[in-house]
Amino acid sequence: MADLKITDIMTKEVVSVNPEMPLFEAAKIITDHNFDGVPVVDKENKLLGILTEYDLISQSSSIHLPTFQKLLQDISVFGQDKSHFKKEFADVISLKVKDAMNIEPLILQDDVGYDEVVAAFRDHHRVNPIPVVDSVKHVVGVVSRYDVLKPLRLVDKNH
Image (cartoon, rainbow, N blue to C red):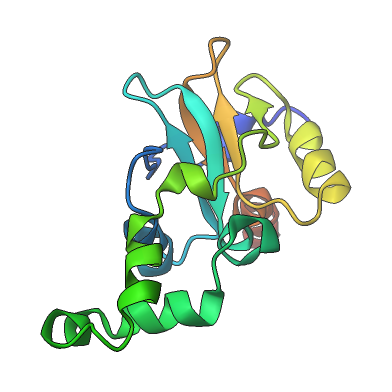
């Protein structure tokens, strides 16, 4: 596995969001795809940050998660009678990805080896996924703990 590179294990089909996207839409993308997080990119696919489940529930994001979850579940109800939750609805609907994203995410360059990927997850155990960028910070992939385990499954199948 010493000769494996990050490009051998990373997910290349990246689902990303932009900073102006409504936060509830980004949260739905994370939930629908069962992701832990998504890169935040500009129009040129340059990394601006990351939005994770943790960012959605952290105190600094000023989002009250139970209210947010309730709004997502009952979005159709609010179309009929939103007066009951009007303020909470307006507050949450107005939030953008840029209001909750981490603007200094851990990143990995697209030329690092497998051992460096493993070390990144070992040293930063709360981080998942990690955006993979090229030399000018364009997102070329993401790597997750799941991706780190892929080579181990291949070794197991060959024995």
